[in-house]
Amino acid sequence: MKKVILFLLILIWAGGASFFIIGSIYKKRNIEVVNAKYAVEENNINVELKVKSNSDFLCIYNQVDYKPTKNVCKFSVEDYIDSVIIKNEYNSIQYFLDSDKNNSKTTKLEGVLENNLVYVGEKAFVKYKYETKGYPSKDVKITSENPEIAEIVDGYVIGKAKGNTKITIELGNMTDELDLEVTDLISAPYWIGQDRKKLPCNAYTEEEAALLDQLLEREVNKAGYGTRAGVVAAARFLTLQFKYRVPYFFENGRVDFVDDDGKVKNTGVNKAEGEGRYYKKGLYLAPSKKKEIKYTFAGPATWGCPLRNFEPKPERGYVKYAMMPNGLDCSGFISWAFVQGGFDPGDIGAGESAGTQFTDKGKYTKLTRELFDNGTIKTGDLMNFQGHIAIVVGITGEDVYVAESLSFRSFDGVTVKKYNKNTINRTFPHVVLMDEYYKNDGNYTEHWE
Image (tube, rainbow, N blue to C red):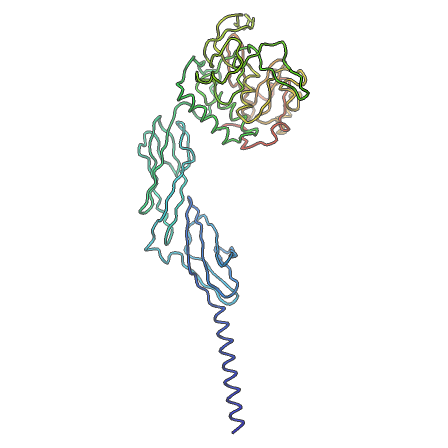
């Protein structure tokens, strides 16, 4: 009898221990999703799963393991997904994200335009993000209130004509409206040789001039303010996007500046700014910009407006004391582009005098075809002959596009000329390589297209 009782006690103890062990294992095997969130931005889904598990687990999607933080798995995917595998040491489950598909409801929708100001022909991407309950919907609808002003193509807004319209984003039970302005003040960059009309006096209203400044700043920032690409963007803007040709004007003087040792340079010249050279941010188009001009000699006069010339060069059509449209000389144009691009080159000229010229800003090098073939020369580098400076704004195939301000009788003003790589050194015997000056290339492109 005692043996029977002992056997029963052992059996009860073993059964209890087994039950405890099995229960513990089962408890560890248990996996439960207690909360699931979906946030959608454009075509990306941000998944957040809060999981209850008594042992370490992983969330697995498309054979990629996502380790949780404080029992929460967070990850983003580009395409829509149906389920996620959740696995611990003892078990795995397939959690279906569309478990609440029939009750899907957008709880928040926010749209953003890449640019809410575009020029005719420009594309701007329509971005959006939303939060949803249940399975994320793909049925985002983007429409333009006036397709004649702007149309929607593959998720992009494309400017069609000058005007204002609304862009509407619809998803489920929610909508968001965005204001869009389309302008024809500038165009996409294009080269037509020297055929652009010369800028007339007071061609723009104050509002239009302010809008042009905004567009210039945007193009530079897109390329990279304070980079090589930013300077190139400014040069391309004035020569390839701006409707008019800014006239050439021999400078009436300089703004003196002080060297590191405290000595004043450029002594003996007229103290003037905005007369052939413009050191301010933006375009010198609006009469209100005259208030920013501190030193004048014959001005102030905005670009294209009459200003007295003091340079006696009748062979180029410049008569001393004659009234001529204000604009930029060659180094004045390059200085302007550098200032817009985020650099302060100082009040310097075009030649080769040490310490005062653009040729000292970079590596002054004899120009050869080999420098193009080995990729040494890039857009943003400077082309030089004695007394003249220009900037490369495009390289493609056998051609080099150089932006410069010229003062010939047959042609004057800021323009882009096309040169052949084999013969460009007949015009420009030297190049100034600017890598060390720029430091950063930014969103660099060899050509504007």
